[in-house]
Length: 593
Figure 1 (cartoon, rainbow, N blue to C red):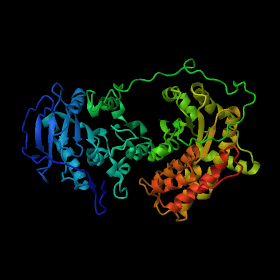
Figure 2: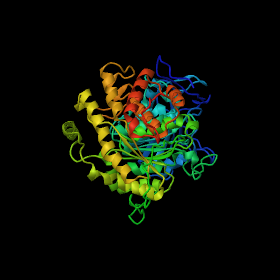
Figure 3: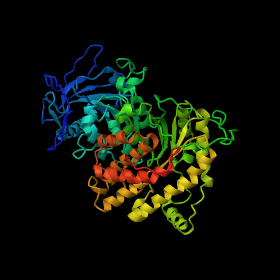
Figure 4: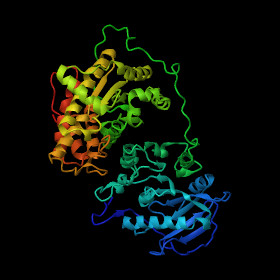
């Protein structure tokens, strides 16, 4: 695929535009066959810059009552504003929405799409629809922006413009691979802002697909919603092609690619979802648990470190300092599928303190979802993150650190151990071979600390969780592998490198693009490079690929300065190596050997 041109915002999509695209203008009416959309108005001109291209079709609900809602939809590459499936229009009608299909820019096969022009025309079309709302009978303040593939790209900036008339976003196979080839020119997550409208991003292919619309391309968008604490506004659906109730060599469901559109409407209206089935909450009777001391084998020996060299089916639960790292780990593990053929990935996310183990357990909906995954009995690795102590983290950690320096004694973790054991008991009740993974992130609110103190606090946190939590859990569960990584030092090392002007790929301490170290100066969420480095630490500890394969792997999958990558990974892995010791291993080894 060809890249964005550095000289401007041009995106190379293969487009085929009908030669007769502007054969008729104005409010001409036509009826089509029973298998096509019955447009009420066709070839309506919405702009004067390019009359042969600035055209749209309108389909109004046949049995609806004015004012209707309005969908402004842009097609995918290789089609035009005339090529819309009747199933998608039916989804709009059944929800009381008019459907507008519009054209923006065209090109010959393989020629570039001028994104600046396309984005301007999206705004022009939107204003035309607003101005003529009374004429066509729709509610100007109830507009949903939609697009498929290239159409999502062209609609993207308008959709995230925070215009109060835009109440929702629906994309199909959105932001395909070419979108991401030159992030220094345009990086879609930068356009996502808070507050965001309810958004559905749905994909036919799943994350293992080699299709150019692989949903993993858009994971940075998903991460941006999380960083903005807007994750409740985004629904991300993958693998619709793999659902036999939706797809069998073609869409077999009533609404085609708009299968989840009624769900979006329900969210906009703050009502019950007609698509997503409710989840039944577990009870103590439903989920029997066992005591870690129930094993009568007096000869049990502590479980040594046994990495999953072929990959593992993992479930990872936590907040925005944990789950986004898990997602990057998942992405990297899938880059070369033959390396980790048994890799699988499931997550349960909840932002902030609500994503700690104890709070996830106390939330019925989250506990139900996690229980559903564990109850399959197929989870090889069950990952959790740190707990949240009472009080305010940024004040507590300083006093606890000073006390440790004076006494050499870590604070007691006894009151918080049950937050982990209740989950471990539940997991082992379904699969006694499940390994437990505890991953500890960096200290939040790093803007309150100097780089030196930030480093000290992260190292203190690593030691605290290992000595007070992990070793305790290993004593309680001698027949269960308890894996541990502390990836927080990645953040403190990169911050020090940035302050020392030794991180050339990073230009901003805080920002929204790929060149920022942190994405906010509050909690201090990780930027792209930081997340990637942390996820590779996970990969090394959980899967431990052979060193020659791993070095080649790092060279091929990372785009950052290779010297920086080597330094960061070497130092942070060295700080982790003694947390998980293989049977018979007497000393630490280099990250690269």
